[in-house]
Image 1 (cartoon, helix red, strand yellow):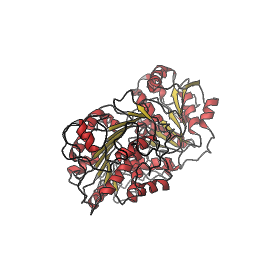
Image 2: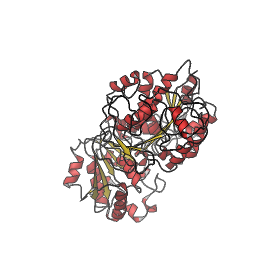
Image 3: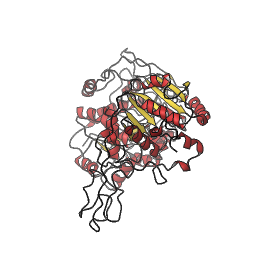
Image 4: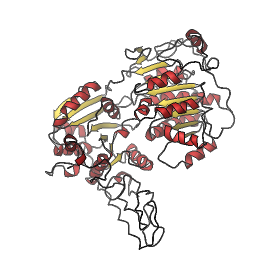
Length: 587
């Protein structure tokens, strides 16, 4: 069992609490009231109390410059362009973790890491705001691993983790785990990931074997707690990542229930791209005198991004430009409003010789991971997505983001655009604008604080060619899977789409589940359904005709037909398969 955990300060005066914790009085947030316990433990800060400008003083080493924030009371505003001279080890990161980072090419911390690590490593609660790609994940993963390694002792208790990270989406939870696991391995910790959309058997097995850290989405975590597989009464460190996104998705009640199950003592960290939509309630209730740090204003665009407003005359011209922009050799992401249109565009691009995969809510978790892996490894250069991919997805070297459908809200624009120009690299962001969308997009870019370069274009325009870059070679799409044979009369069983158990039906495609016809024992051909695995012939052809795709039109399709949309939205539907063909795209 671990040693007794350091407790939170008692309900004494602010100055007494500050003295007990070895830091300055409250900054950037309030306490939720008496929480019991003595002074918080942890290594003493070199040189005395914490300063608001970054790392503690005392050794004369430079720190990332900071200045008071005008929009967050008590916050420290840190420039993302700040030059950090200190190494991870100099900031207090234990040597095994610093060695693990160096082995993966991380030599110098990002500014958000440089200003928070001295405090988080000492056990302080921290509220950190930084845009996607600013290094928030390592900023909480390092103190989490260091703290738990320092208090480890004896055998792990089944179903009783000591560290908890809450994330809003499965994709983000998976990427947090990918960042945390090498650090945990370096100090002898075990990590598991818990989220819905997949069978819970492996998750339950991992919990029963004992884990140190759980990275979880709130829904499945509450399910497993309700089933008795998990308790949170030994959690020493709790992290909330992208808390504002959890608020947007309606997860805050569940998050509060989960936090109420954790001990009042210990350490809590909250890192997010923005600090609105009810996040302040979490701060007041669950963080004790947090130090608050912010990387630049919440709505400021990344300076390394170049923004382009490309006006197109109609839907046909738009479809041609989309195909041209997708045809380059570098990684690019294309965002659309609906799941149906994302799936359709990925299928059309693949059929036209441009391998593409989709990422949208109708896909199974296995298919999401397969498509994201194909894009991350470079097997596929084009990812067509809804806003499910706008946050929490980190893929290196995305050189172009295209808003095929402009978002309706400026924060969504910034989050989508944040898939490029990450970790100091550059990138281009393109918004395709039809004539009837000019007013909405003008408001959008004003609220986002950007001034895009405006061009009237078609597929042959020089600016389109420049954004496309070198055109990739045509890739012949994989042939569709043959249709499944119908079983002999009475030979199959009624089921859940797994095919007949006998009587003449062909073997079902590997991994396909759900959606089969109830009568006659047959299963749907693998082309039906909204994104099942369906036995793909290759990783990039997941949206091609013949498997895992489903019908691209009709009232029963995901996202609905175009007839239910207002005229402006109908005209914005993209159909690259008809580009240049005379008929209006998507009609």
